[in-house]
Image 1 (cartoon, helix red, strand yellow):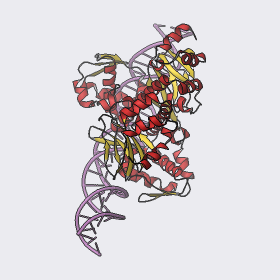
Image 2 (cartoon, each protein chain N blue to C red; image 1 turned 30 degrees about the vertical axis):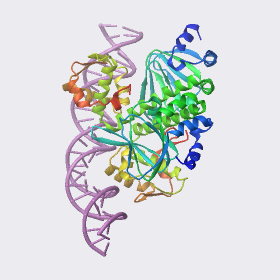
Image 3 (cartoon, protein in one colour; image 1 turned 45 degrees about the horizontal axis):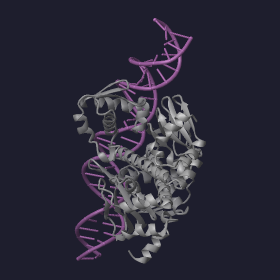
Amino acid sequence: MRDSDIMEIRQLSLFDGMSDPHFDRLTRGAYVQTFPPQVDLIHEGDPCDFLHILFEGSVELFAHWNGRESTMALVRPVSTFILAATIRDAPYLMSARTLEKTRIVLLPSSDVRAVFDEDHAFARAVVAELAQCYRALVKSSKDIKLRSALERLANYLLRQRQRAGGAAAFTLPMEKRRLASYLGMTAENLSRAFKTLQPYGVEMDGAHVTISDPGDLITLAKPSVLIDDPAQ
Amino acid sequence: MRDSDIMEIRQLSLFDGMSDPHFDRLTRGAYVQTFPPQVDLIHEGDPCDFLHILFEGSVELFAHWNGRESTMALVRPVSTFILAATIRDAPYLMSARTLEKTRIVLLPSSDVRAVFDEDHAFARAVVAELAQCYRALVKSSKDIKLRSALERLANYLLRQRQRAGGAAAFTLPMEKRRLASYLGMTAENLSRAFKTLQPYGVEMDGAHVTISDPGDLITLAKPSVLIDDPAQ
DNA sequence: GCTACAGCTTGACATATATCAATTGTCATA
DNA sequence: TATGACAATTGATATATGTCAAGCTGTAGC
């Protein structure tokens, strides 16, 4: 691993307050890798050998059952994924693939567990990260179980608008068929849902979405801080 | 808090390896309470004042949105709930109510965080518990997103059978309408789903279920360790 | 034993969502 | 520019699931 990479990683909140010897131990067996789009990083069921830290690009977490596939989450920088599997030394529950050109740090899971056992600051950081992931997943479950497909899309668009700093226009971060899977519907239904939202001020051109006045959409979507606010 | 209660709590894996002073500090402001059935313990959105540890009985976690309600999980002894909210000092994302007579230990959240910062063994135990909860939730999400209502019921019944030690007969741990909500369907549909499973060897009498030969049901349900095995 | 109530079930019907098939659009590449 | 591959869209239709209303069933209280 290059010194510049190590310097960059050291800045992460996950390693904040960690002692230098522990950090060295953690990064000795680590490596940084850059992947092109559409590369399978992880396959569910495999043993968890590395904790992944996403630096640049984006990664899709998805799951299979009985020949079906569903997108579970989109991971964005800077964030870890499959932390829980690393901690428990258990097999992956989800698969992962890159969506675009992506730079990832791989830390050997056994080192993560060993340093975790010795470095208190790291343990605290891991718990904070894991609790954050857990709460994000609870919100996602509430979204799926309490809302219709149209309501999920409406709220998703409002969240994306928020993410773009409240700008009227933004670009969808993944293909529509993946978005459909993430929102728990088919691509065909997503297409129709977008059309249904046109009278609510949602304009769409390819992956480009414009919501000039979100008022009507908010009335329809009824966003809640307990589902849609990433800070909560 | 009575000495016998303190003794009992001390046995929990969550407090295993923790120093006595830290344990004392954690339990000084704690109390044990017994609740009758149908008592609201927690309301989503409220600040998180206590970490709850369920000792006896059972607790339903549920969520609201726009006048709708959905059962998110059933908590059984011995297990914590709303650990993530405690760690992050964030509002509850789910509500909780007792389903039967229930004994719960309440630990002040601020004490949990303080001791967590000082006691490494406790930090490790918290992470293990949180990672477990996270993985349970991932499995639940996969169940909801990848399976039809009938498949969810079939797999649920097989999991309950497993929980009963593989016994042919067992009792549903909650009312059918709650089970329906947990499985993401209406009570009417659950009723029909049970009927559909009759040819697969599922007999039902009230809350009592008998699956003499699970072979056909397994063929239909296609259970997966990555969704249905609580140990994974 | 009755009664009242709540939960469960059933049937008829409505709606949401999925599926299938065909078409259009888009982009990379020859 | 033409071509092929693939995503997105559209319309027609099928299926899953929800809603409503009625009846059933068990049980707690009298």
